[in-house]
Image (tube, rainbow, N blue to C red; front, side, top):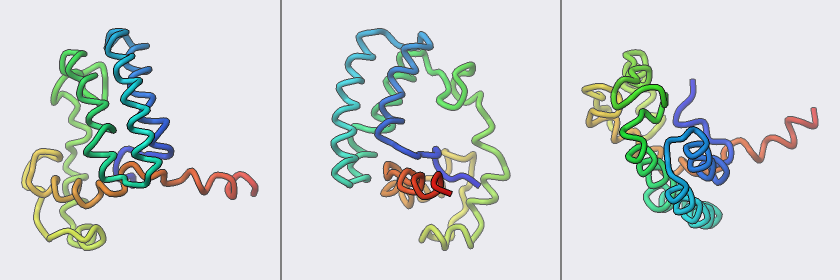
Length: 150
C-alpha cells in the first residue's frame, strides 16, 4: 500500500515537474524558467527540514497548480485526461482503507468518514493534514546505500 506520491527525493521530484511539463508540451519556456527559480526556493525549504513550510510554501501544489492551469486543467495523475476524468485516485477501495479506524488511529486522526470521493470529502483533508509534515521529507533515500550493499 502506498500513501502519498511515493517521494524518494522530494527536492529532485519537485524540480522534475517543470522540466517534464515542458518536455511534454504542457507549459511554455517562460513558465518553465519561472518554475525553475521556484524549485531552488523549494529545495532550500526542504533542506531546512521544515517540510510543512515546504508543502504550504514553494513546493508541491505551488509547483503543480501553475502547470495544470497552463495545460488547460490536465489531470495531475494522467496527462491524457482532464479534470476529474482520472477516477483511479477516487476508488472505493482507497476510501474504505482511509475510513478504517485502524488507519485513522495510526495517522492520529479523528474517526471521521471520508464522506465523498477521495480528495473531496471532509475526512480526506484530515488525512492530508496528518501527512503534510512528512510529505517533503526524503523517505527512502537514506536507506539506499545499505540496501545496495547487500
